[in-house]
Length: 300
Image (cartoon, rainbow, N blue to C red; front, top):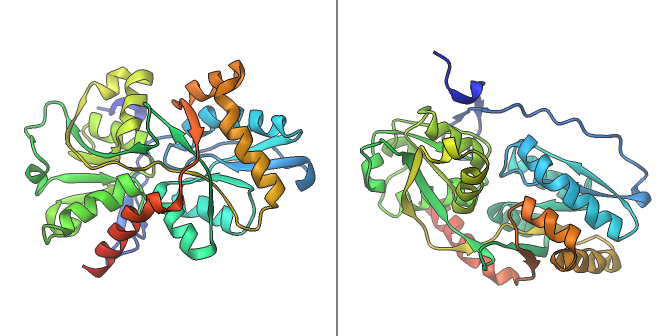
């Protein structure tokens, strides 16, 4: 009997960046047709957040990014990528001008090539989110400790909420995912992880808590099938980032464009579509807890 959402299961060995490979499970059509690019001087190139499935990311952010580009007298060109590393690579090699990165990806990019924060989203009044461990609503699991011996979905090996936080949680207790869980997979997107748990594909998953709220609004039948059994401390939001080599004047204009979005009706509408209230600016130091967590996991 087919599972809900017509799940397409493509099991490939995806390097997890640690001791062994973890299968990747793709739960949605990732194909996004990207329009031909214009000459670089005439357009701004954006990367939609890889934390969402490609079609969802493109749907939520293409119009918003195009609006930002138009405010600067340019055309906007939005691309999506399946993995966090691919999105970061686009920014590192300046194939795009602006990237919506995961918080952990930003930390990696800052260390690797000096990625800079342009702006960060404010959701529910704060520029921070947490990691939530979710299970099916009918699961007997009541605490994260009850997940021992069960199957688990990570989002991406470069995800903060969807990989680093739960791995750090386990490491703090002296265990690894390979030992604690019976099976682990990557879904490559937080909304996919919600679907994986709701459908019974896995017993539990780690996601951005705010994404669960988004799915509840867009697909209540899916979100209503899961519940939260653990929530982490809050971490700085995934930022809009740029390459340090981007023209300083353009960088300043882009920052102001993002910060001004909520002040006009159309910008506010596009922000609401993406589940964002407004953008703000925070200092790089806000990501220090993530750096410390990465260092701690690497040492163990």
